Amino acid sequence: MAETSVHGAIHRECSAPPLSRRDLISGLPDAMIHNIFSFLPIHDVVKTCVLSKRWRPTWTTATDLVFVGYDVYFEPPPDSPLFFPSIVDSVLSQFSSPTVKKFHLTHFMYDEADHPRIDLWLRFAVRRSVEDLRLRLSQRSRFFYVLPEFLYCFSRLVRLDVGKCCFSLDMTIWWPCLKVLSIEDAQLSDDFLGRIFRGCPVLESLVLSSCEGVNNIIIDSLCLKKLVLVSLGFGSYVKKLCAPHLLSLRVIGGNHAGFRLDDVSSLVEADLDFSVESRDPNSKGRDLLRHLLEKVRGVPTITTGGWCLQVLSLLEMDGVPSPLSKCQNLILHAPVNQWDLPGIAYMLRSSQCLEKLVIYLTGDTLLSLMKNLKNILTLTKKIFMIMEREL
Image 1 (tube, helix red, strand yellow):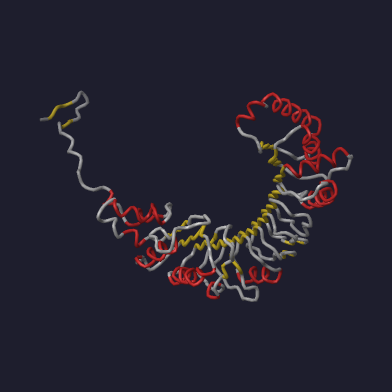
Image 2: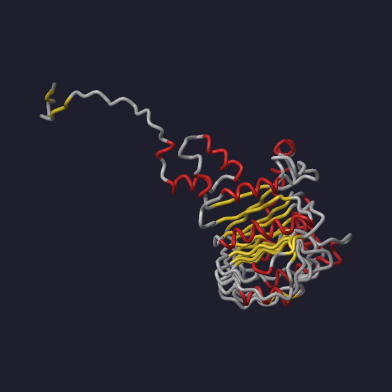
């Protein structure tokens, strides 16, 4: 039956077709299923085999393998089906994809007896041209895993993240496609770091966390733009950092007493949220911060933390002149109390080009912030008064 509207259009009466009862999940293309898998750890990926008949073997063709260990002192016994190494072995034995894009193994309580097993796991990933490799063993592990020789000259790596692993410092590095490198809790050397730079011609980002043996970092690469130094190992100080093409530098955590900058003339952001272990911050902090502020005076975005503000407050109260800075964006990560105000004044006085001031209050819960709201408002008013006076 048809009817004509006032505009002459013809509408046909038709009933909507009944909703299909077909399995929509089974109709998803493999590319979409694999994309879903990429957001899940492998134990959740395997569970998807119960969703439909088509999904039962699909997990074996996933391109991302993410294994997350228990990170506890006492794992299930080796004869248990929940024994983590047995789970990894079982998954890899059923895996059928010819390639692996991502292979992550984290929070695994490593023991020396596991060394041959991890070698086999890594060889499995290398043979399938892995691009994103992450091997972060549990910090509670009593032993370090010695990286196998075949990994040092693997040309397919794009991202490498290792923790609680031991490097052979006499090895030659050749990672021609590597763009992101992160090393945590490792023994390094200036010479070995230099070989990493020479063997990674397109490296863009480097993170060194809790690493020992690094004293001089010389970066000539035009590609490396981001460097992060986190809580270097006890007794290890970067005495010299020369990176004329570096754009972003983060120095965070503790134990940076001897840190010195040489040429960082291209920096656009510097994060100096670090601390120096000393009973008297006035003894080691003054000269260090004055040196760093002088070196980053041309950097548009600067971030500082609570310890730095304390030392800057000492400089302000002692009448030490502040070097003029071209900082346009100043970011503070600190509890911010009345004792930090002189430090804020010190930074504002030197930042005549400042356009934005951002303060992230740290160390307080929301409840305590509400309780101290009056004090915070008072401090905020004082900060605005300082800004009005100094800028």
